[in-house]
Length: 249
Image (cartoon, rainbow, N blue to C red; front, side):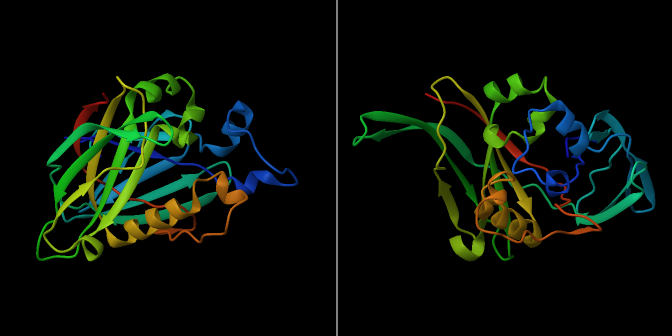
């Protein structure tokens, strides 16, 4: 969700439906991308009696400029694919924004390799007195911008790294300081975002991280990803992140 009333959504088919007898697929192949991404879908999002019809920005990418971002409100997403007649539906709750206290560049000296790792560190404080779950993402703006010209870049996960946190592990009301296992180049600009997420979305992302990514799932240890999508897979969530910009040094 993008303040004040914008939102973006990605709709796709699963890779497994395309594999058939093939051992692998090439996500850089435009013909494959055309098969994966949902084109000309009918998608609506409903909340408090309002029905907002999404518009298509590109194959698989849909948006809204009229989404009232009402906290503690349930939103229902309905998607219909006229090519196949398939329908999916999902519901999520919009949670309050949480502040990202600090984010700054750090250098980690790898003495054994004679090299320097350019990374970052950030801090935030858990909201006390309630069970909380958080998502932190690190988006490399430099490399992300170069992939925007190709819609297949939607499936390029190298530009966006993430970690999830729970106050069950870190302590209620605790100050959480974290330095991700993330490396870039000096001068890279990173968007560091922190979002308040539901327990079910936390469990989905934690399982997804264990699986590696969509491609390594094909050859790695099977991981069952939880879903809140009726009739489909994946996860529907609306988040309002706190964002800080970091230039690696």
